[in-house]
Image (cartoon, rainbow, N blue to C red; front, side):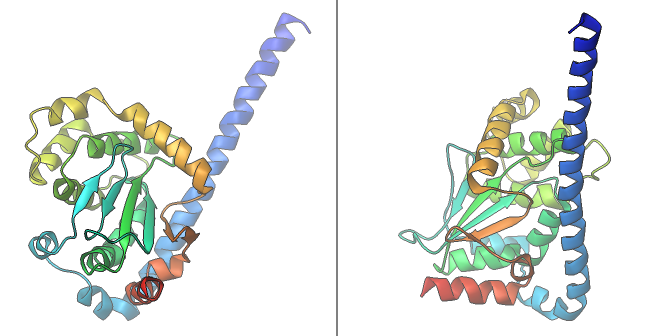
Length: 250
């Protein structure tokens, strides 16, 4: 093969890889938009339920089960001695459907953990491969990894979703992340440096790749109950969510 042919072949391969990456992100966005759309429709009929399962930040903080940040970046929320059922939440801070799941069912997960009815494990990952969503997600994930205190992490978790940027614009900028950390009560002297240097960016990407392969994840949010994926219709219905997890706890 001539040099020119090799060059063209390499370029074609790169184009094919880029096209495949765009297709993967498109599929993930479709899942996100469809899920968010279903939730928006359901919200009309379940408004009373949302109100019954939410609380003020002060009330939520006061009622949380112990929270422990793990070395791999996952976060465990459970009462002492509670080991099952295990609820694994795979989420991307840049994912709109994840934001909606947090808004709708986030307090239900917290309540179940506080009641000793579940061990809830959060897995912040970066599922997007195209920009600016990928870099936005990595910066948010890196910043979350800069927090060692469980309650501060959970408060920051809520602020990230509350301030989630558009998928088409650069967001989760370092100065914003540092400010939200302060709002979450983070006082660690090295927090700002950790955020701005991207100290844990590679760890965020490596963990994401590992967990996506191990768990065969194709979309976020993905919630698994004792290793089995829960239907998104249940994940976005606080009452059904509570019923399934409580049943598994018996």
